[in-house]
Each structure stands twice: as structure tokens, then as C-alpha cells.
Amino acid sequence: MTALPLHFQLQQKRGKHEECGRRCRLHKEPSTTGTFILFVMCIPNEESRWKGWSTVNAALDPSTLQIKPTKETYDRFQQAYDHFNKALFGGTLPNALITLQRRKGTYGYFAGARFRHEDGRMADEIALNPATFTDRPYKEVLATLVHEMVHLWQHHKGEPGRGRYHNREWADQMKKVGLQPTDNGAEGGKETGESVSHVIVEGGPFDEAADRLLGKGFTIIWKEAPPAARPATKGEGAAEPEIVQKSGKRVRYSCPDCDLKAWAKHEARLMCADDQTLMVASA
Image (cartoon, rainbow, N blue to C red; front, top):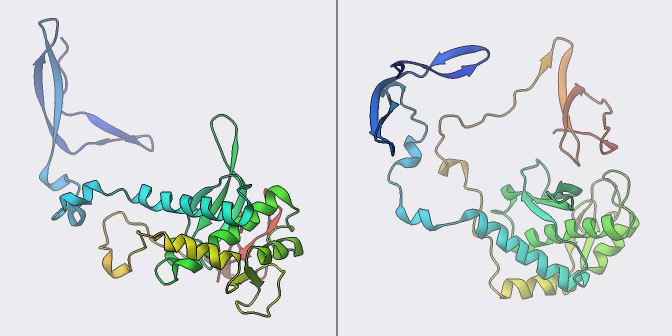
């Protein structure tokens, strides 16, 4: 049998080999044929041992092994979706894939046919911003969900406005489900436009349906922890740096539908070719 090297190259990166930084030793175990199989066992050197988990692994509570944050979060939003689909839309809306997305300056968004199943079926996306869960009442978070469900309704059963435009059909459907559209966050605001929010109509269909759901014990168990409660760990991502050219500061633009990003001069007008939507400058 050919002797195995005690030191070998573990990874290949950018065309160059890097040593694993570990000491190795031969280890043999009997096989089913009566012979012995040789293995190379790598033992990390103390100085090269990865320490990225040090703050996380300290004093691990065994009870955390039993929690299921993904299931506990998404099952509840599916429950809410089913409840409002039946109460406000007669159970006629197809299921969407609900995601959590931190898009700056938004409570949520809708994207039609964003996901494809292996068998070819399509599903829409309804995204909710988890950074807004802590400081908002549950009913307001649920109102955002229904706001996006109205976009989904219009995507399948109506005529959506171009790009981000909230048209009259959408506004009328919002009022039918008990959410008053407004462009300034208060009653009396414009009901249509590029950026339109809503207020909950007291005693309206949504208000009553939300009260029934909350009365059944609906809650959002997992909320984003404040920065002080999250110890920084090695490898945690940093914010994207601003790009400044000699000719002046450039602005980051993003597509409101697919979140495509681009950088250009201030007051530039960029359009996403895929979604045919004007891109929005970051604040």
C-alpha cells in the first residue's frame, strides 16, 4: 500500500493550495475483509482552532435544543393568511410563500410568481419586515399582511398598476376589506399613487377579523432582538460601504420589486429591465 502523506493540501483557493494548518496522524481500522484501512486523522492546532462560536457556545441552555423558531414563526403567519383569506376573500386566494425581508423603509411587499416549484407550479411572495415587529401592535402587522394580500388578489383577479403604482381598483378592494388607503398615513390622504399605506377602519371587516384571530391567541413569538442583546461574532456581515467617485457621491438605487441594486449619480432615472419598474434611490 502506498504510504499516505502526513501533511497534505486541504483546500484550493484562487488557483493556489493552502495548507490546512493541522497536524495529522495515521489511524488504522479493520475492514470486513480482514485487512486494515488507513485513515489520515487531522487534529487542529490550538492556534488555528476556529473561535467563531465561542460566545454562542458558552453556557448553552439544553432547552434551546427543543425550540423550532422557523416552524413557530411561519406556521403562525400561514395561520393568519388562511384566516384572512377565508374571512376577507372568500377563500379564493392561492397560497403565497411568506418570507421575512428587511427592506429599508417598508413594512412589507408583494412579488408575483417569485418562486417556482420543482414540478413547474408558481407561487407568489409576500414579504414582511421583521425589524418592524417589535414596535408595532400585532394588528398593524396583520394589516400589512392583508395589504399585500390585496396586491396578490389584484395580481390574479384584476389589473395591477404599472410598477409600484397603486391604482383605483386596488384602492377600492382595500376599502372593501376594511383598510383605508392613504399616501400620508392618515385619513384623508390620497388613495392612489406610487407610495400608499393604509389605516385600519374601526369596526370594518379587517378590524373584526383581526380581533377574532387575536382572540384565538395569535401571537408573534419571535421578534428581532435589539443590537445590545446580540453579541458580535466573528464573520458577522458589515454594511455596504458608500461609493464615492472623484466627480462626487454616487447614490444606490434598488428595484422595489426584485431588489436589484445599482449605483448612479444623484437624480438619475434608472429602470429595472426585468420588472419594467423605476428604481428607487436609497435614503
